[in-house]
Image 1: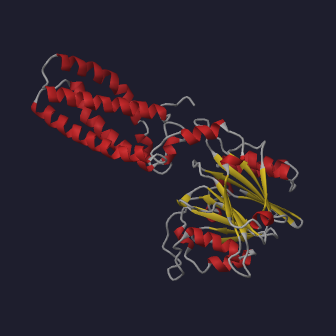
Image 2: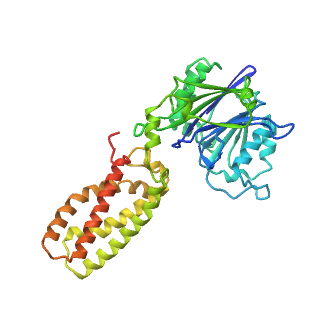
Image 3: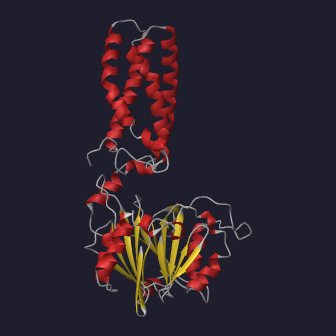
Length: 402
């Protein structure tokens, strides 16, 4: 995200990078006298009719944005503050009750905001002043141009921050071009900072550019910057509280269509639920085959079956807990765990082992030595391998050439 202030006018651009298909914009009028109506965008559904705010602006021209950012866990410095029990209410109330950075700071300092350990927030008021809200620190500033990405400024040197392409691109663009607050300039800057990964065409879900002086917001959907939809905050609030699904506002986008039809354990409950019994079957087969091999002579290659089953069980758990694997380049590199990185080679191990396993297994089965139930069990185990290989291929886990 970025903010640009020239004279009395401030423009704020926000890029939401997400794999969700439920992007919405909604408008909420003031609940009582002295409060402000506001517009919000977001895509993460908390309940069927509630969405967590990702960015927004109120009638006083106060704008906010939320970015994912990691901060190492510390002892809670705010144990006696109010607890945040509902993030939607908390984030919405700030825009409904505050108009300046000073008011936002006073509001936030009542609460234990360390619960947002994986997020960094920024609030910008109409004057161009901003407040960065980290899990344990608040940072105020009033530079005319400011760029922020997925890091906490208090613990991240600029040299380190520039390793993030979107931040580096934004900073370089502002240095290389005469800065102005036109929509054309801001959309070009947002375009420069957007993400589009080659594997699935995924990346920036929604770009919102907020004009805090005119109370306008321009939306650009799924990193396509040739089409925009504009909303006037005052006009929309006059229609009452309402929500609008964003994908339907824009022409069909092939990359978004791919995202909408791409099935993973995180957007398809059937797949996620099916991974549990599948892992259980692999455990059972590994145990039975292991016991059989202990008691009966078995071709050496087939002795790998329990080991491969064990590796697959671990990998299924990794797949069920790491959504990034389904979108980032293969083999997936996890910056915090060498074990998760190593597990990303599992699809290749299974694929390479499949041919010799089939050859040795077929020869052994034709020999008539194994009992029928052992034959059926081994064939079933192989079918699970094939199912997983096809699933890995569908998810692009073999796409090392992309």
